[in-house]
Image 1 (tube, rainbow over the protein chains, first blue to last red):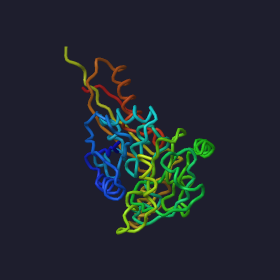
Image 2 (cartoon, chains in turn brown, cyan):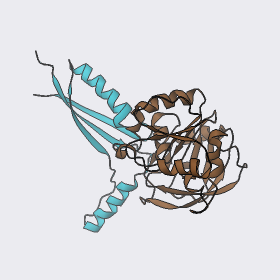
Image 3 (cartoon, helix red, strand yellow):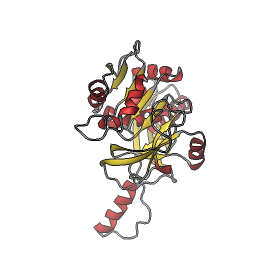
Image 4 (cartoon, rainbow over the protein chains, first blue to last red):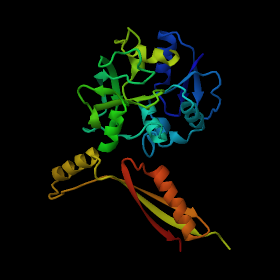
Length: 217
Length: 87
């Protein structure tokens, strides 16, 4: 039982995720370099935040072709739990594991602040420990977190209960106040906020603990 | 006989429905420079490449795949392609 943390050139939240999972929650973790292909012994995968491949071309566009992600795709399609945080969420949309795209914040600012979120767990295995409609606080830190999808598809996502995290005060212009999305099966979650930065009482806020604990829940 | 080389230029632009805050900020800066009358300013990107291919149709097909699957993200971007055989 172990959680795999993918490390791309340019990832910068991989160690934060390892500290939150391992140091704060006591879960075993293993780092996976982007060129690896062996996911044996891993029960969940986290794509951490950062600037994979320098965010060249578009955020997540190059990372999508990393060898390890071919295995992550198969893992996700078999129902394996996959969590994409910030840049990891951008990678999941570029891979097509989640629909839509993340674009430049409405006001162009890099936003580094606390954000209040409303949780609608639906079928998400990552959010099953939160109440329906529960409000939590997680930090955000992104320049390109404005979720974009056409209105019809957004409606479809809402009807299927895939919009599992919404900003209560939209900071970046995301359509539908989307902060996080689940796939219909509930095993894949992508979110712009950073749950790994809300797990250690020293740094303030513990609302991310239940989410990360669900990795091996 | 050498394999022909094609010069291509792929223009990637944000779809009209997608907000372009960087374009808006640049438009505002144009006014501060004293350039008046800029009604619309959208920022995209241009990718120039040289490609070996046996013929024009093959080059076209490869570039379309490349544009659609890597250079642009069709969720938010449109692309167009100019292709010429290198002289």
